[in-house]
Length: 532
Ligand SMILES: Cc1cc2nc3c(=O)[nH]c(=O)nc-3n(C[C@H](O)[C@H](O)[C@H](O)COP(=O)(O)OP(=O)(O)OC[C@H]3O[C@@H](n4cnc5c(N)ncnc54)[C@H](O)[C@@H]3O)c2cc1C
Image (cartoon, rainbow, N blue to C red; front, side):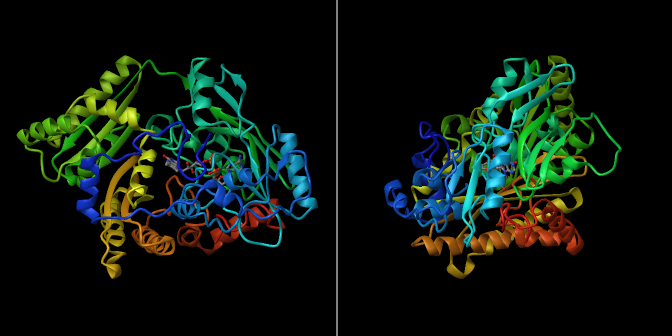
């Protein structure tokens, strides 16, 4: 069963306990820290108020069910779950199994003046699924029972899934037929295909498979105004694309019940590799050249010097890292080095060719190719890193991220602005923040900038929340002033909504509002999210 107050399945506890060296490293960066006390499940369950919902056969009003669907995975969500101070809970959780049952629940909501929150895997990191306080009862509709491969058109390479299908279940059902979707967000284990569409997700191998926008070919959406069935076309010039209206709609326009996606046969070969560049600038120049030359890699990630240092220190395999550091130093790459991880996926011949082309650009920029060993490590831990949040939490250290996407000409300054803004935002408390960045999701035009910040919990929950608010505001303001989008992949939800107008403009916001209002004139679909 999924943890009620943290990440992952209760059975998995990877990296829960920090190694001594990792703990010392963090202490050296931030100073000694103290863990905050955790509330127990029993203590929180008794705080869940009586439900205000009329009875319905598809709705559970069980207190624990409601509690488990109250929050996502943002830092405010973690602080609420760990302190036990949730504030709000949905009045019930609906479990439909078909589009018709979703329609029925929406009609029920309309009839009884109920607010509706669609719930996929609950992995939102921007407050997407938190119920707002209000007079109307709140019904969270979980898509978890709509979790099957419903149709497979092998000739057209189109698969239809129930919107609540989780990442591993999608890949397992497709692999049985020899296919893959290839969408691997770091939250893959717990997020759903409907959630990916509703929040415009991007997977780690977007370089090969594209973002969800490229995969989403059509589907079924139940709205308060009726059913929208979007057919699949390879391409169309018939006016605005209806799919675009629902991608990133964050539950404001309706509930996605079926998702039709473009799939490909499982690749013959896949491997991941690591290179170290002597400097951040050489790494940025080389990776831009690789992507702008159209070399067919499946993923790229360039860690800046602080992220490189942090990863190597927290990696947990000290002897190997020690030898690596010696080798890199011998090759003239030590202080200020940047780590470049990349993947090749395809036929054996394609992979060999892509590796050869990449290595020739890498050596032009004095990069040291270290082979596939560290790449294997990355592959092994690609979905395990989120579990590290637990180990840090237990010693009073909190980790969060901010991400954006910009044109290449704006990338270097944006990295500086984001890191500086975040690092200085707790100066008034004399608190140090450990900040580092990587570039990922590379495009010819630019890339995503992904900044991680690690800070100490305050003396209590309210102080910690205030710290996070300062950090988040500093990061978001730096993104806006650098000309970046407020999110490349996490979406808007509640936390990014105040910054949306800066990129959409007044007219753009009005158009989005009108569109949501057309489907939902009473404003009962996920109010308070997306639109400021
Ligand atoms: C550790 C961690 C790592 C992450 N890494 C990535 C990453 O690499 N790439 C990335 O893109 N994101 C990432 N995320 C963010 C998050 O996983 C994505 O936003 C994901 O797409 C959310 O999917 P979900 O099924 O969990 O949706 P939820 O969190 O349940 O919902 C998100 C939003 O979509 C709406 N929604 C969900 N399902 C439906 C539906 N069927 N119909 C209508 N609306 C719906 C909800 O109402 C809500 O507004 C990460 C999150 C965490 C915690």
